[in-house]
Image 1 (cartoon, rainbow, N blue to C red):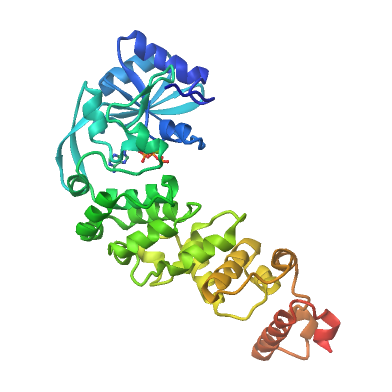
Image 2: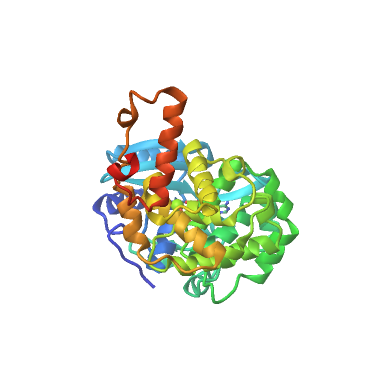
Length: 380
Ligand code: ATP
Ligand code: MG
């Protein structure tokens, strides 16, 4: 089987593979670029694996005039920029020791060893520079069936690196077949070892959850996370019940992890998922407005069209109500509106606190009129 693609045939990429090949080394594409091409999904980054030692990759690439960045040279990874494209080239590796978070690796000349330390069979697929697929572990049938399956024994693989629990659910959400159900052995291993999640950094948990929540339908993966006790360790109090209705309502609307996170509820996700201040505020505002009576236009004015849409969708999902008619144009109308009163309109006969209170009162009246009261009507 052979794959193709603009990224694979890029002249810079092919030139880089050619110089390593001429120097007598194996060089293969691996991971996301191979997986996504086979799944007809966009390719975002180019990872390669080679039997050349990192220092050799640096020498060969530099001698050919490519810029080299020693990204993680101690772990075997160098970045080579060829034709303006970044290539992460990692020497074949084998794990010597693992502690649930970090691995002590040694370099290997053996592709099978490199494949065996990867997490899921769909991530252990390689492609020659020609595009010919190399499948040392028989992962291709899993990939074509959208089955996320651990390489080797799931419990052992999770004990080596507990992040794999979250990657399992994330890959199921993004690449799995929701009609097929999650892999049972993998799920049982995640349930048995769920407490390992507590030892992960909150940055890494947050990064995984953002990707999981941005999947087109994360509901089955989140339900499995809840049933295995993983979800409450990630975000205490989170309840995945309303995610499926939300995804149903979203239909043709682009997914947003912030919206899904607001619908999950539970404790403030800011510290649990190490959100930025801005992200934390956005999710908190969505959660606050779910219970308010503001109309779509008022939400569009107060929050902006996109966060406003999050509230309208989240409300409909949580309250099991249909989307209000005309909600999209109302959000846009609100986002493009300006509150027609300014402090100057009330001065000089109002000042200080009284002025502030009056402005607030007029704003509330304007919002509850669906932004329809005019300046004259408000001042009258
Ligand atoms: P994406 O970049 O879209 O998240 P990816 O598959 O490229 O997907 P990366 O995190 O870039 O994911 O990792 C590249 C490859 O490295 C994976 O495809 C997998 O083979 C391997 N890998 C990454 N993280 C792990 C891990 N925690 N355990 C084992 N193998 C891993
Ligand atoms: Mg990648």
